[in-house]
Length: 320
Image (tube, rainbow, N blue to C red):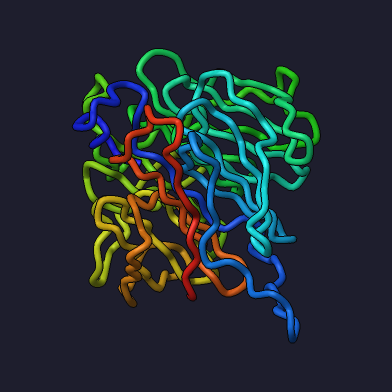
């Protein structure tokens, strides 16, 4: 999500939200059996729940978090049925990812928190304070030795070691400062920097989209050194969520109401534009995930009146 929330009066609590990426790159493709009911192309999210991120398990169970109160909603891509498994108590839930132990790792936005949630029963297992002061913990990806989170108001990534125990002192997140060609973000929370995050196809580095710079960067997870990914066509302007699926990169561009598709080099240093996906159902799309030959896109509907408890949104799917 982007800092343009400020134009709609959501000062402080809003932000350039992170990219959800593919969860479980090795997930089997959904098989539609003969005579089986077709999977829904649009999934309704409950009223009063403003979704942003998305994570999908290998079995086609999806999760999204609420920007309004941090609740987590779980739903079945095959049927569209779901329920809220975590009732939020204030801090928003932005980007989220599943780890190998059946836990959701949730970026907490302006709270500066990273929350660990049991994906089965929705219990909050741990809350880590990654940042204090002006911060916006935005998006997450699992890879390169652990879990990585962007902060849209600071030139850092947060690293959380992913192991069986994420509650002890050894599980505390640490900050990795971004350098090299990274464009620094002016302090104060008036400009937006790091947004969506994903792994490079070779798994050796991270890709981060920079909202203000309108650029994509490859980041060395050991040093924080960033280099601009050279784009051969296309655009990452208004880039929000990132999805890397094989050698294909999907950039969800919220205010462009589109998803730009690129073919990546293995190391993520070059990206060749392939096509742009548009759909009349896109309504300030923020993040996406790939499953079963479909791209599932979350509509955050930033311009909707979320003070009205009847306001609702959707997750829509498009063919790859």
